[in-house]
Length: 550
Image (cartoon, rainbow, N blue to C red):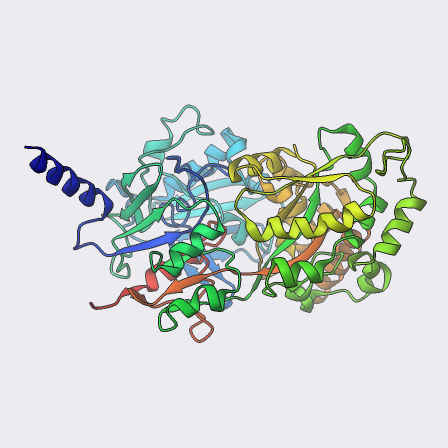
């Protein structure tokens, strides 16, 4: 009896551990956390699962920066009016939600009305740009703009479209966890969910089902970079985004035939200070440009790149934030006037701190504010992000060597994100996704409409002239006039230094060809294939995958 029971129990465990053999399953690591929480709210910026956007809620279109082309998804086209004051999207014919209900222009209009009704959902502040959203017919929606905007399509497609017949019944969409989502993307069905693993499977009504050769993605819970490396090295993962130290030896060498990676310069990683930090004494220092400049000159970027980054990142010493990634837009006057503040120079940094009155007032060996109040900086970094933790430890050596009282804390990623969104932190590293035009890193970083909604505005730095210039930038078509505006923007940002650039991170992307082909690579640059939730191009990569015939 006991043996029979044991055998039955073992069989049940094995059945839970693996999907049916007929299914084609890609095992993915797209985020790191100590436990999975069942949340698929596409508007949630802190605790929603990273596979919610794109895979459950497909965008209207994807701007493929590697090919400089638009990949139309739910929409088959869009057209910007000649006066730049409206844009019209046409949806594909016959779209359905995963529960079989029609997906129409009504859902698009509803979504944007919903953002007006619940402003906390509007994580990219698109509502502030719109005068109205109107249904032209069942498949056509016109967005009427408050001001001309040549780049409005990029902002509109960044917002998920949700089904009216589901969300109209939700009384508190901000806290709604959406545990059983009704979506439009390729993988909408949550077939299994535990704190350690979940599986997200094929949408039975997906419009592009013919392109999708994958039945499910499996997400094992992995808490940190070392766990991701272990899973990659033992062949458990097919697709991952993670910092992997010494990747050629620790990953590729384990199976050179199948273990691959592709890095290209991407997100800006910068040190950031909260201008609204709850600590009043820290706030006095952080809102002083001389203090920020001194901190910048105390950051040994090259050592961070070489040691914490294993040489992967591209150093960024540009006080305007743009760096090598946007060199085509660079204003050379930035380096002439402010370039020194982006370079590691401890002697100049300590001299500037001394001149600005940041000296030890109470004899404890630590620098204080000019009025004698103490400065105590906690550099907050997500637990398990080993490359960033190493970067902070390197920075702390020179910061402490200059007499600054700094320490590091490592909360869970969701806590860290919430602190950055609210500005309730002292100092942090933060990453900002790359784009085709430097307008986007500027608007994403400094738009007051996004304060309290997005971690990308973590410094909470406001400048009316910057916002005015950004508004002008989108209202003209002439490239020469746009460059004049971009030149002015760079000078304002470089002079104020609201963020402290460190490097441009490579797009961390690892994959295995053992079970699937169709991966993007340097030889096959179809799209940016990073599987994190900041990259909608991952949807194109998913649809390109083909299982290897066993």
